[in-house]
Length: 230
Image (cartoon, rainbow, N blue to C red; front, side, top):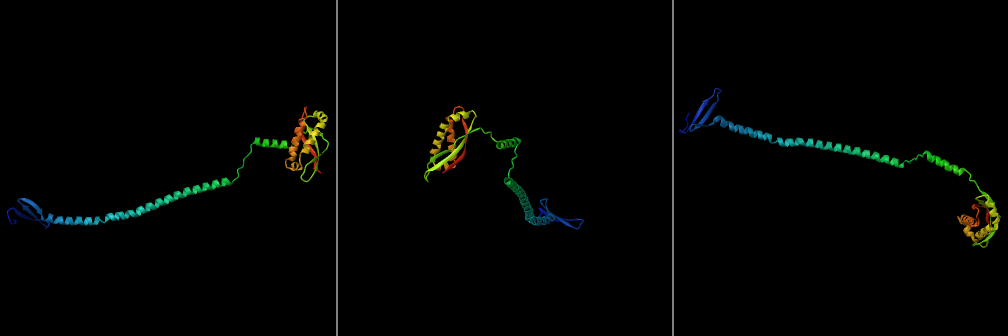
C-alpha cells in the first residue's frame, strides 16, 4: 500500500495469527513497525511500574534491619553485663577472703630449738643459785634527816663474799667497813630512802665502798635483814 508522495510508502502485512503489521519506508529504508511503535509505550509503562514497585523496597529493607540491629545491641549489652557481674562477684569473694584472713590470728609454730631454749630458761629460773659465804654485820643505828623532825634508821645486813678465804680480810678490816657503811647510811634522808629506788641505790653505794677496801676478793651482794625507822 502506497502513501502520499514517492519518497514515503507503507506496507501492510497480514500474519497467520490474524495480526497485522504495518511497515513504513522512507526513501527505500524501513522506518518503524506499528507493532514496535506500539510495543515501546507498553515497555515504558512496564518499566515505570517496575520502578514504582522497586522504589518502596529500599525503605522496607531498612525497616527490616532495625529489629536485627536492636536485637544485636541488646544481646551485646546482656553479655557485657554478665561478664561484669562475673568479675565483680569474683572480686567480692576475694575481698571477703582477705577480710577473713586479716581477722584470723596468726599462730606461729615454735621450732624444736625454741622449745628447748624455753625449757632451758625455765630450768635456769627454777634452779636455786649457789650462794657464797655470808658474813653477818652487827646492827647499825644512825640519825637521818626528815621533814617531820629527826628520825633514826636501824639496819642490819649480811655480806655475800666471793670466796670463803675473803672472810679473814673482812674480819681484819671490819672497823673500816662499818665506818664506810655508817657514813653512807647517815648521808641519806628519810625521803631518799622511801623512794622506789632508794634502797637499790644505797645497796650499790655500800658494795662499791666495801670493795674499795678489799684486795683479796670482793663482796658479791648485800642482804638487808633489818631496815626500819624510829
